[in-house]
Length: 72
Image (cartoon, rainbow, N blue to C red):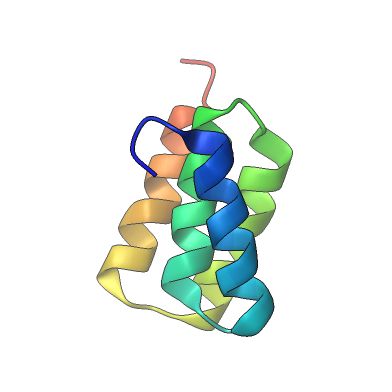
């Protein structure tokens, strides 16, 4: 859902509910949460994603979530 982050989170919530081990979904959710300013949730989701997969895209998206929530 381009430019509709709340809807995007809802879609990702459903995807993760049906496939809890879907690392790319969790990493994508981390980025959207970070963009919404929900840092704690974003970090939790990024950690879960990285525990599930060492795929480069998962690592990249987790890094994006952390970068979006950094103070500097």
